[in-house]
Structure formats: C-alpha cells, structure tokens
Amino acid sequence: MPSRRYADGEVVMGRWPGSVLYYEVQVTSYDDVAHLYTVKYKDGTELALKESDIRSQSSFKHRKSQSSSSSPSRRSTSRSRSRSPGRPGRGRRRSTSQSREHKDDKKKTIQETSLALPAKPSENNTKRYNGEPENTEKNDTSCIILEQKLKPDVEVKHFEQYSLRSRKDEKKKEEIYSEKKIFTALKTIEKAPSKTKELEFGGRLGTFMLMFLLPATVLYLLLMCKQDDPSLMNFPPLPALESLWETRVFGIFLLWFFLQALFYLLPVGKVVEGLPLSNGKKLQYRINGFYAFIFTAAAIGILLYFQFELHYLYDHFMQFAVSAAAFSLALSIYLYVRSLKAPEEELAPSGNSGYFIYDFFIGHELNPRIGSFDLKYFCELRPGLIGWVVINLAMLLAEMKVHNLSMPSLSMILVNSFQLLYVVDALWNEEAVLTTMDITHDGFGFMLAFGDLVWVPFVYSLQAFYLVGHPTVISWPVAAAITVMNCIGYYIFRSANSQKNNFRRNPADPKLANLKFIPTATGKGLLVTGWWGFVRHPNYLGDIIMALAWSLPCGFNHILPYFYVIYFICLLVHREARDEHHCKQKYGLAWERYCQRVPYRIFPYIY
Image (cartoon, rainbow, N blue to C red):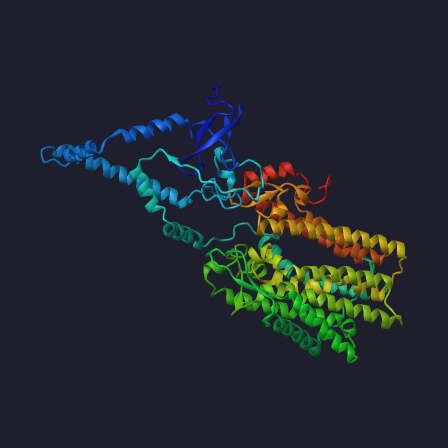
C-alpha cells in the first residue's frame, strides 16, 4: 500500500477539477481505501483529489524564480541566434518543434472547449461547475464534491492562480477561451436534436391504450356516482350515445374556455421569465391566474344574482365531460399538426421519439404558442383548475335543491373548503409551476390536454358529485379531526414546495442559511435538511394526506370516493419513479449520496 505524501493540515497547491489551474488548499484528511485527499479551498469548498492533482508550494516558487532569472539580454541574444543566417538547420528544427507544439495545443484546446470553461472555486457553489459533465456517474473520482453548508454572506475572495503552462501557452488559451467562442460552442451542442430513447407509460402500445382507457375511466366514474348503489360489482348500464352529446352544452364549454383565455390576456399581473430553453432563450409568462380567479368569482356572483341555475352543471354533468373530452381531442390534433413544422430546438425532450402515437400522446412540441399566448401554460391552471371550483360550487347548490336543504351539509362544506384552499394556493403561487416537469420537460399533447381540461375538473370533483346523490352525515368532532388532517397535509405540501422554490430562486437567501445541501456538477444543490432531508418527495406526502382528508367526509359506505386517493398514490409513485430516474441521470454520484442520506422516498420508515 503506497504511503501518503502530504500530511493533514499541510498547505499545498490543488488542481481545480476540469482545468489546469492550481489554487492554494489545505489538506484536511486522507482516505486510505480510495487513496484520495480531502482538501479545503479558501472559500470553504471541499473536494476529494488524487495525489497526482496536488503539488507542493515549493515547486511553483521554484518554477517562478527560474523563469524570472533569465535576463532580457540573454533572451534577445538567443532570439538573434535562432534567426542567424549561419544557423539555418537549428532555425528550421526550432520552427518545426514550435509548430508541433502549436498543433498539440490546438488539439488540447478543442478537447477542453468541448467540455466548457472550468469555474473558479471562488464562485458560489450554487453556480454551474462547467468543467464537469452533467452526468457525474462518468466523472473521475477526483471530482467528487463533498457536502457543504450554505453560507449566503460569504465574501467572494480572489485567489492567486498558478499554472504549469508557460506564459505564451496561457496567452493562447485565454484567446481561445473567449466568452464568444465558448458560447458559440455550447450553443451548437445544445441545438443538436436528440431523439427520445426511453419511452414511458408502456411505450407505443401503452399510450395507444391510455387514449381509450382515460375517457372510459371518466365515463365509468360519473355513471357510478349516478347510481343508488355505487359498488364496484354493480356495473352501470351504458347510456345511449345521443344522450351524451348536447350542442348547447358544448357551446357553454367553449364560452367558458374563451372567457378564461380573455382573462389570461388581460394586462394585469407581473411578467416573469421561465427557465432557459435548449437554445438559451427564456420565454415570458404573465402571472395573473389569481386575478382570473377573482374575475371568475365576480362573474359567477353576477349570474347567481340574476338567478341563473348553476346546478345546470349537475343535471348535464355527463354532457359537459363529453364536450370537454371532444375539445381536448381536437386541441391535441391541432397541437400535433403544428408541431410538425416546429424547429428542432422547440420540440419536447420527452415527446420526440419519432413514433406518431407516442409523440401525439406525450406532446411533440414543448411550448406551443400563438403569438405570446402559451397554450400549455394557459391550460395548466386556468380552465380546468378554476373549473374544478365552479363544479364544486354547482354540486353544493344541487345538493341543497335535491334534498331541500336551507344550507349545505357539513361534509359538502368540508370538501368545498379543502379543495378551494388547494386551488387558491396553486393560483397564488402560480410562478412556481414554471419549474415543474410539465412546463420544462413534457410536451403539450393529448396527455396534458385531456388531463387539464377533463381529468382535473371532472375527476377531482368526484367527492362533491358523490355527496349530491349519497349524503353523508358526520359529527363536529369528526369534522374537526379531518380539518386538522388536511391542515397538516397542506402545511407539509406548502412549506416543502416553498423551501425548494426559494432555494432554486436564491440559494444565498439569509433565511436559508440553516439549510445544508450537496452541490452537484450541474451547479444545483440537493437539500439534505428541512423537509427534503426528511423524505425525498415531501410535497407528495402532503398531497396524499390532503387527498385522504378530501375523501373522508364521504364516509365508508363505498370505495368510489376514495378512487381519487388510490389514483393519486399511483400517480405520485409513477412521478416519483420518473423523478428518481431523471435525477440519477442528471446528478449522478451526488444523487446516490443524497439517497444514502435520505433513504425514504415518500412515506417515512415505509417507502
């Protein structure tokens, strides 16, 4: 076993991974098994380096004094001798060796430029380490980044840089490493089109079946709620096809959709930029979802004032669902046809497989827009999510009319209140949706169109629809316990998302000084304290607790109201598996270390 060369506490020069620059570091420990030195830079960054990446300070001082000892007269004499006509052979040999060195430097420069310019260790660790590829699984063990506590007010220090190259070579590298050339190289790499290789949802066959299974599931659930005995074994009779369609209902749905589009276009609310796209651009989004909710509430209030019967939604609930499904299919066809003419860099990374069925389902284009009107962003929160609240209100009024009640039941009040809180929270924190995979990764196709316009408003309102035909009486203590459960779920959901969003937006925020994280090669940190040190997906845990609280007011006579809970658990487990796979590819060894620190995914001590 080789003996260690540098002792703990010794000050040496350590090479920054991915570069030729050396910085003053202090040896803190040595791993006898991996033969790696843990060194600490002046800004507090800790890295594990090989012995070959560490030099003693004396070697740099010796080289510096040696280079400065040669006088100008000697250098000029040697230059004059090399140009002397009496020494043509030596002059040719020297020029030949210089050209070879120039070619070798050129080759090295091309290889290093393809990686990108290495970042200085004096920069904040939340920025991108450009010297490392994103998939750290392929990195050398010398580039392992150790856990560091975030210090928001750390002063940026300037290190004295040392290099083993000559001044002439360094000057060449500085010319080649100009920002313009690096940006052009990176832009060219990012523009290269990439096909989707890993298919989700069972690939082509699975997505083809889902396009029929999803509408059939919605139809089945709504028919079951209409029955007196909505047990799973009591399969509902299929209605006549002509009873599922009504032109007036479809017209009302179109009016609703375009009314929300009008609210979206109003010049109210701030305009923010989304995350950078593959071509480096950032799209702009107007954040006015909460204003749209207020305008919608005012419009509904006016209709009720003029005695418009809102329970018309309950009486024609099936026709509204069919109308929404037909519109989502037409929208999906339009989206796919227009995506065929979209540039390669505007295609979705998850929906560019080359298979028609799969790309049609997942979504071929990432951000389809008509001018500044973003179709995917609009459908994500507006017509479906706000429509969910309107449907719940219609069910509350229908319950009062059907059962001749002067006020709605306690169960209906709880369901409406809990889900109203969830929707208002989503609209109030609308800007956070710009960092979700729906916006940044998934294209806009049948999956999101049907999910936003049909599944969300007509399946998420299942509990309220069920209570109209199957009233459930609960006591005040039970109602209080369910309310506490929903509040706990909401607190976990909101605080976890706030921690994540605030950390992404400004890691140097003094409010986050107590949080620890694992830096990654992408420049992002993985939180290992707070909610994200408790389980890997605490927001999913809060979601599931709230979903259970929404179903409990419906009682235990039938399992139908709990379909949402079962579906939500399956959905989140699928998302969690997708997130795990995506994060492992993106963060590599850093993600493996995070999983060791936080072993539980959603449920602590269970899963």
